[in-house]
Length: 178
Picture 1 (cartoon, rainbow, N blue to C red):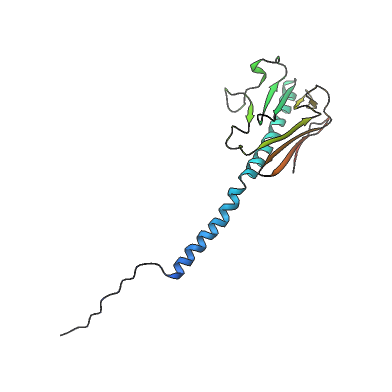
Picture 2: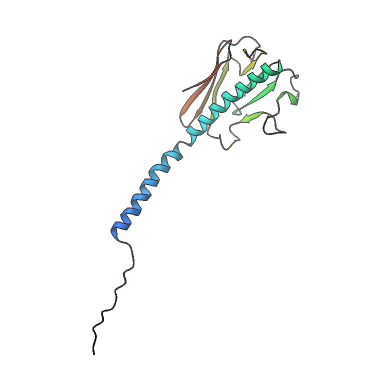
């Protein structure tokens, strides 16, 4: 009895359809990831602007609740700022207040040394020609010369984008704009 048995043909590899589906999935994933990676500077800038506004509000609320002046001092050269208690003498290390969350650390924010904000630069910090804004016991802003603030703006930049934080005269209202 002779049976004609055909050997099974085993094929290895992928069909053209399978390859096209994989390429399409990779293309879609790349289209999603590339814009997210390129906007890292923009996201850092948004975070930094929000943080500066919150820190200005914190200094203002400290001034109101404690009844004496607190200042935010900006330094464009080091890309940093700090919050100071102006009731302490100049040069006293305790003049820079302790960070309320990171116990044992002074309240200094340095964009250049913080990997989460390393793309952000301080373009300008101008409070009537000074780099300092302070708040009195009512929350009214003063410039670095201890006179009533007429104009206060901090400009931050990253990835070709610029945002500003403004401190309004008299009220000390803090706003963010493009």
